[in-house]
Amino acid sequence: MIAAMSPSVPRLRIGSAEIIALADADGPFFSPRAEAFPEATAAQWAEADRYDPGAVDAGGRWRLHFRAYAIRSDKGLTMVDAGIGPADSPAGSWAPVPGVLPESLAAAGIDPAEVDTVVLTHLHTDHVGWAVVTEAAVPSAGGAPAPGTGGRRPYFPNAEYLLQRAEFDALDALNPQLRETLTGPLAAAGRLRLLDGDTPLRAGRTVATPGHTPGHQSVLVTDGREQVLITGDLLVHALQLLHPELAYSHEIDPEAARHSRKRMLSREAVTTLHLAAPHLTEPFIRA
Ligand SMILES: [Zn+2]
Image 1 (cartoon, rainbow, N blue to C red):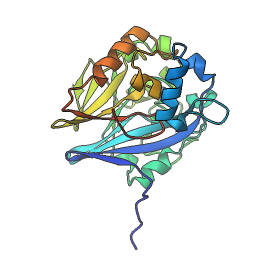
Image 2: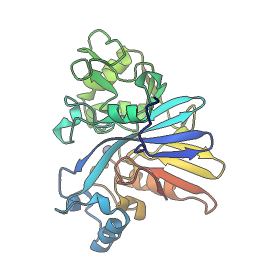
Image 3: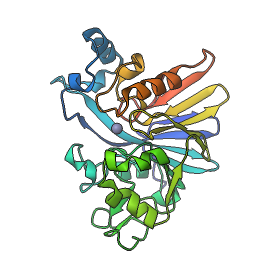
């Protein structure tokens, strides 16, 4: 008997590549949503709630999803982000850890060992959670821990991890703890590669989209006039899709973030743009 692949794994085909949405968790945001988007008007909230009704709970709180994406093509398997992580991950101070990414990967038929590339869109804890794990949290993780890393090892043992240099350089301002839990172990394992701007991938390319953080990047996969943009936190709520000018209160540089959003969301009419946004309710939407 052949085990059936879970029908609950959302996928989007683009050309010869396939984008796979991988759930890690969902839960309420840690502060009132009006504080997260202080410029949004009542009419804009109402419009966003019609567009993404799953993003508000009965108590009026912002309910967000946490997901990673994979790009599978005949050239390889790329992950984009790594969720909130296991019970001991740094996101545990505010996000509903442990995430279920390992189960989602299994449901999608993905073995972490076959992933050749991990694009980290940025260094917020809800996007890097499973990138590096402790032996205590994931005894079966394949990579050997490098000396001096406290037993931490890359969860995707054969992957090169790609981060923008501008993001790496901002580590002290963003979250110095990640030196010990993320970038140090990756560098010790020889798995960290720093990028300077837009960079080709095996399928698609990274695009620098600064603002949310200094070295934020997204991933664009193109086939003819059709595109899929794996956004990272270029937009974190439907408000910012419907009204790209609206700032999110945790953006490091709101003006740069606004510029990045407008640039990426403005398309010629002949181009079909799909968005794969980790925090929206639907894993894939048409822009
Ligand atoms: Zn995020």
